[in-house]
Structures are given as C-alpha cells and as structure tokens.
Amino acid sequence: MNDATVFPTLSYDDAPGVIDFLVNAFGAERHAVYAGEGGAIVHAELRFGNGLVMLGSVKPDRTATRGGGGGVYIVVRDADAHAQRARAAGAEIIREPFDTDYGSREYSAHDPEDNVWHFGTYQPFDFDHAAAETKATA
Image (cartoon, rainbow, N blue to C red; front, side):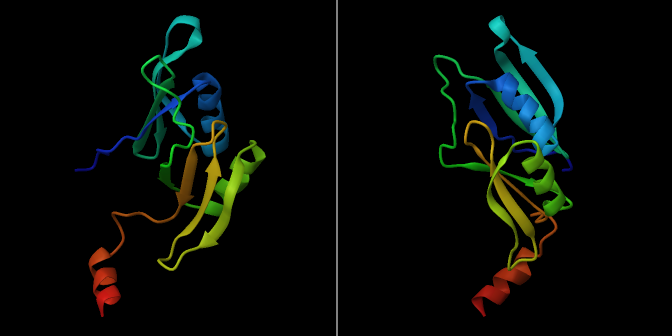
C-alpha cells in the first residue's frame, strides 16, 4: 500500500490563519479547503509529502485541540533548513534541531494555537526495526 492510511485531525479557533501559517512556516500544501459561513473552515486537508493533516474551525461539538497532549510528526529531508524556515515565519521552536541515537535529525515547534509539530529525517517505513529490537534485547 503506497497511500497514507493515518490522517491526524486538529481543530482551531482561527483555522484560516493557522492554514496560512502551516503553509508559510512548515511548507504544507493546500489539498482542499472548504469554507463555510463567516469564513469558518468546515474541512481542510493540508498535504505534507504523501500524507495529509485534516483540520477545521471549532464548532459547538468540537473544541480547539490546543496542544492537548499529542503531536504530529512529519518527515523532512533537512531538519535544520526546515527549522530555519519555520523560525523565519514566526514559529516557536520548542526543541532545537538535534541528532537522535537512531540516526535522525529532528526538531519540534508550536503552531499559533500551541499544537506541537515534530519534524525529522526518521522515516518509520525505512527503519530496520527488527535489527533494532534484536540489538535492544541482546
């Protein structure tokens, strides 16, 4: 299966503003944006590589996620360059780029409504998990 099958969903008080931020700071591409009354975002899909993050404006039955404990991880080619772009666009970098013990280069940032976004070179489908698990139990 080559298509993504997991799509994180987020809700925002200012979804139109956050969409602009995610495009400018994090390099998202607008895949679909459906606006409703008063400019509220009924549904939006932002593309990151071959994956999507879905989001929308808050509703009476859907409150803003506001960093409620989770986060979104996006694979990037160059974490340092990506962090520089995000910082230049006003993102709050909450964890500066660093090297992991599993060979990735990663950093983390907040979006304007405090959701946490993680970016790094770690690609879960390319990692040799069996070898790492064997090494960890040896």
